[in-house]
Image (cartoon, rainbow over all chains, first blue to last red):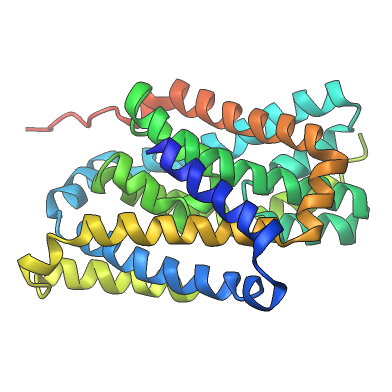
Length: 200
Length: 94
């Protein structure tokens, strides 16, 4: 699965760079949105048809919130450590990690609140995170665990990476992924804004 | 992307209600696979045709790859550590 995903993205990138004229490639965003709608409808049909998943999810109770909390804290802590090694301040590196895969928003926010350079770092970092997530999710699901397979996508596990998670794991994990993605998406703007204001 | 969320919810509602004929629902995995490949191709096209991403990647690519890898590893390790607590089964009071 990972190889097919990588091949599809790389073929698309090469086509976008070398072959397709701008008059066609500018519609790729619309195409993606329509495609994701179609795809998520069928993911929903699978989830809805698996009633036992809802019963299992209820057994988790409040502990289910530890999944998005762990993803947010883990991302920020690790990017702060990596950022210190690369010469970034705690606030700068933490804010890049707090994008949690939502590249458009974190890029725009940090460009406005800090600098074009840090905005670009956040933008590209979170694009790369989503791409790595697509390839890594099936591998993590098979070799490490289903719950862990949610983590690479960050906030994207409620939309773009959700179908890969659903396919690699199952309806139960897909529901946890969706809930985690919604929660993470809602806190990205708050976290990025707070972290970039840190004076150290 | 909120429109897409509505399609997901619509799918869940129709899935729960059982209104999707079994013959169509069986094809769900196939629909998902092929549409996913098309979407990934289109994402690639977006990346390849965006000067912002290509130039950004060429100038700060290494930092971005390190940050992205760190964020993924940090998320994965922490959720892995929390897993025993997250999956702790509630004791049946009876």
